[in-house]
Length: 155
Image 1 (spheres, one colour):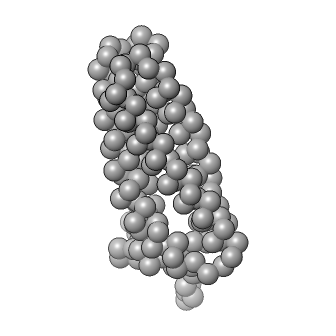
Image 2: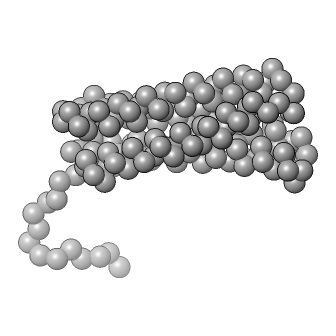
């Protein structure tokens, strides 16, 4: 199934998702650096700013993802896509609350770090479902083209 949200036949959603994934994981890593005394209080700031960057990146990735979702017709694929979407909306809410708690509380607050662990775990589940959509259900995958012979690799 081809995607409607694409540039030059390349789907946009998979181009954008690495940003929130990496930023949210690095936010948790920054928390751990601070918690285990590998770095000073600046790491709590790094955790906050990367978290906010992840929220912005997730919102940007959601737009083409939703466009792709709206074009689904198979009920099984739609159900998997709904779970993927609901988890991701929940992640944006969780990280928004997490960022708010960080601003309102001091660097010693533990709840934001717990929320980050929960968020990264949910991110793994969402990624699994995204992989299911692409690699099993064929979402945003172009159908094979008829060819007159073997493909040549560019030199």
